Image (cartoon, rainbow, N blue to C red):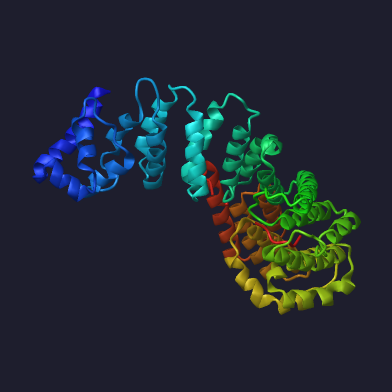
Length: 466
C-alpha cells in the first residue's frame, strides 16, 4: 500500500520537476492551498488527497480527467477502514466518465471490508437519481448478489431499480424473466415505489399478453392508490405537512388501476365486466387531490373511456357503433392505431366490411411505421395481421400476402414465437397465391430468422386505449 501511495505522489513530483514548478507556483496554477499541497506530497504520513484536489492537479498539468484515477484507489482505503468521504465521489465520477477498470478495482477490494453494501447503495442511488441509469446497475446488481437479508427494503429497492431499467427490452423471454425476478419484492417497497412498480408490472404483462397477471397487478394498484388517497385526505384535513413523494399524480395511478383491469378483462373477452371498470375512470373530477397535471390526467382518461367504450361495443359485434367510432378517431389522431386494430379484428370476427374505414385512414396507416415503442410495435403487428386476414378473406391475395410479410417482420422484431408461428401458418395457407418475388422475400426472412436464433442479440408506455 505504501508503494502505491508513493507512486501517486511520485507521479506528481515527477511532473512538477518537468514543468519547472515549485510548490508555491504550482499551488497558484492549480488553485490549491500551498500548505495542503505540501501536506499531501511531503507529510509524514502524507495527507490523503480528495478527488477534487486530484482533479485540480490533473487540470493544472493539462492531462485528461482521470489521468491518475488508477493510482487513486489506495487513497480510498486503509488497513482498517474505507474512506467513504473519498470513495463515494470517486466511484460516481468513474462511472460518469467510463473508468470501468477503476470501478472493478474498487469493487474487488471493498467487499473485503465490513458493511460495504451501504456505500455501494448510496453510490447507486445517486447515479440513478441523476439519470445515470445504466451506470448505476453494476452497483445494484452487486448488492442483490451479496445482500444477506432478502426481505430488506434496500434489497427490494435494488430489484425495483433493476426492473425499471429494463424498459427498452424487446425480447419477450427477457421481459418475462424480469417480471418473475421483481414480482416477489413489489410489496416490500415504499408506497411511492410500489405504485410505479405495480404500474410497470401490469404494463409489461400487457406486452407479454399475460392478461390474468395484468388484472392481478391492476387490482393491487387500484387498492394501493385508493388507500393512499384516503391517507392523503386525512393528512390534508389534519393539516400535516408530510406529503408522499410521487413521480406522477396520484390520480394517474388510481385511473390506471381501473383502465388496466378493464383492458385485462377485455382481452379475456369478459366485456360486460370490462364496461364496469371503464366507468371507473370515465369521470374523475370528484378526485380532491388534483394539481394542474392531475387535472390533465382526468381529462385524458375521460377521453380514454370514450375510446374504450367504442372498443367494447365493436368487440361485442355492435356494427352500428362504427360510424360514430370512425368520427371519434378522425377527431383524435392519437387513438387511430389502437382503434383500427379493434375495428379490423371485429370485422374479421363478425364478418362485416370496413373498406371505407381503411380507405379513410389510409394516409395515417402509412405513418404508423414511425411509432417504434414496444406497445405500438405490438399494435402495428396486430393491425397488419388482422388486415392480412381481412384482405385474404375477400380474395385480395396479392395485397393480403404482402401484408402477411409485413406482419412477419414485426413479429420477428417483437420476438414473439406465437406471433411468428401465426404469420408462417397464414402464409403457408395462401402460399400458392404468392408471387415469386413474395416467396423469395418470405424465404429470405425465414433465413434471417434462423441466423438470429443461432446468434441471438438482445434487442425492445402505453396510452390509455385498450
